[in-house]
Length: 199
Length: 168
Image (cartoon, rainbow over all chains, first blue to last red; front, top):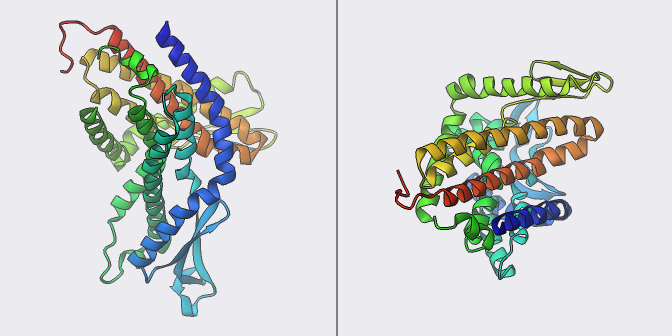
């Protein structure tokens, strides 16, 4: 009965917290993503200086600007192009791990909330940064193509590796990482202790 | 716990890599997604005459709004997470297989609710549709996986034989 009570309480709290945390995150997703965008900008502009111009915050998303333009629908060097080619990157498809973790964390009865919450965020944020890097690599692979892969003297990951990393970081990590961090941090909670029993 | 996490992550990577391989997509994922689309059609059509279905597409006659149920909408990734967690946790194979079967069913029931709710939400408001489709429903599906796993742990804890080994 006590086990059911813990589970019921957890479910009630998690459903009550999901909508407000997601709404808050929607409002704050631009500023939240800014440090990650800045870091990935540093990595990409140093890794691919001849391909990536900059990655910057554009409202709630990021814009990945290249060193190329477009002429007659074809990729062209910037000098002869009509405009600089850039691609929007939706950072929210990665950063929703943060409100999901927030809802899980605060829905669980614990002795201490804030310190462990900050520790959880410190684990999730680097994963968000890595996911954003993979998302940008996928954009460059799809939109710049052979020019991206054939940069002299620059290591470019294999297309299959970029594809798998992109899929894994978009489809699995944003929901799985908060769940793992929550499980790890909640193993001493009454909810999990009562579920684990004598296992 | 460390052993569980290591085995879980290895299994997860293996299953996920298998899932994205072309033959697996062609012979397993695409037919399964088609079956899910047919099931969604079969649930909606008897209750709503304003909806038509062809193949994996559901459409409203009056507004013309349509959704196509594609790979990625099929709950397979969530099922992979659950399968990896169940196998990584020490238990008898009979319990593991039972949990995988029931857990897969639980995920697919929630996923059907997701598909149908998104179809109606999209007809009402595209912004709300995109927000719930891209961000809220994936979190809810993972929450479903978490709950199934915690319930499975509770089942194992209650049914643990005093003389039985904890791993196979």
